Amino acid sequence: MIKKQIMIRYGELNTKGKNKIDFVRMLEKNIRHSLGNLININDLYHTHDHSYINLDDNSNINEIIEILKNISGIHSFSIVYKLDADIDKLSDFCLDYILKVKDKVKTFKVNCKRSDKRFPMHSIDIIKIIATKILKQDLFKVDVHNPGLFINIEVHQDGIVVYFNSIRGSGGYPLGSLGNALMLLSGGIDSPVASFLLMKRGLKLDFIHFASPPYTQEGVIDKIKELLDILNIYQDKIYLHIVPFTKIQETIYKNTDVSYAITILRRMMFKISKIVADKIHAKAICTGESIGQVASQTLESMNTITDGINLTILRPLSVVDKQDIIEIAKKIKTYEISIRPYEDCCTIFKPKNPKTAPKLEEVLKYEAKADYETLIKEAVENINTIIIKKSELNI
Ligand code: ATP
Ligand code: MG
Image (cartoon, rainbow, N blue to C red; front, side, top):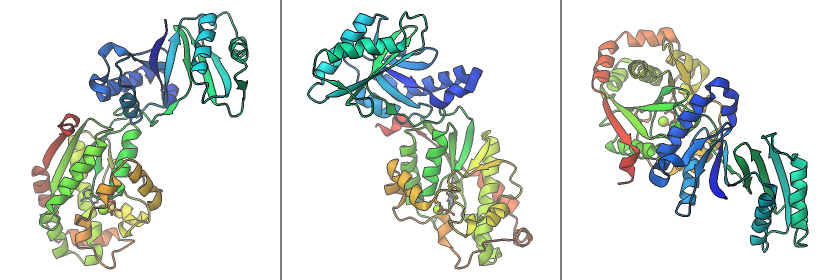
């Protein structure tokens, strides 16, 4: 009997030793969740090295493929045909297949891997038998360098698997498998891209946004929600914490030399983020910062801004060029949303000459001029948390 399946390869997961099974379970939970009712509960299972999805005539293969491409932790996957461990059936199947595509394919190459050493033939003998059978037709030639068709055979304990091509997955680790973190999301180009890279790596993200109405428009929140709708492809349920930031921002501009305003503004963002991160048990604070991009993103600035924040700070874009960031933004389709004009709380009072190397003593001097502790407490108490669920998007 020939079974049509999707075979999923884990890639980096293989290096995880005894933790591997936990990763596989988490990956399969994410796959089940993402595919929803495109598959039945028993259609997904794993053997020692791979996960499999059973397909039948009613399966919406194209839709399943598109979804699998975005699930982190999948290295690659193939549509495979699983056969009984019988060399005659195998060679018949390969011949049938190549004859079906004979109008397009003139050359082929057979690859074979035998992980079940109990199978009575060596890989090289399997390859010879299949190639000889196909060559007898006088329709095809072998081309080992650039074949029109790869015939890939893997001999596993539970049968023989044949496939003709592989689709690249997004790589990384299963979502959530590396813990959760708090991402600072503005409406710009960089932070959604940073979010994507972190999720792909296996981090589950909560999002925090600092809003300063009426200086920033209501539209910014809609924009943020739209960005999160897109990032929802990678993560099912998203928490967005909206911090009322107006009072703090006004206080900063009243009490600070304008060249230090951005530094203190960003310090307040981190202080609030740290409180929220601790509350939700996030193990890192993440941003879309890139070294050198703007005044607040020099190493000196970053040190002054995050002084006293006792938590790992992840900046996945720290060494990525803007042009490359834009390319990823276009690929994941956040770019068009990000470039829509909007006012961010950082852009509103943008000073002409912000400090590129702000001094901590100066900062502390300005911060002593107002009761930021109370303002921070008040802002945290008034955070509005919105839950964005995947299911809501399809309505
Ligand atoms: P982006 O394109 O992500 O807005 P940017 O190049 O405009 O980045 P900044 O405005 O200096 O850079 O912000 C740096 C990072 O700080 C952002 O990537 C984001 O992580 C965070 N950030 C900035 N503004 C906000 C905000 N209003 N709310 C939450 N996070 C913010
Ligand atoms: Mg910005």
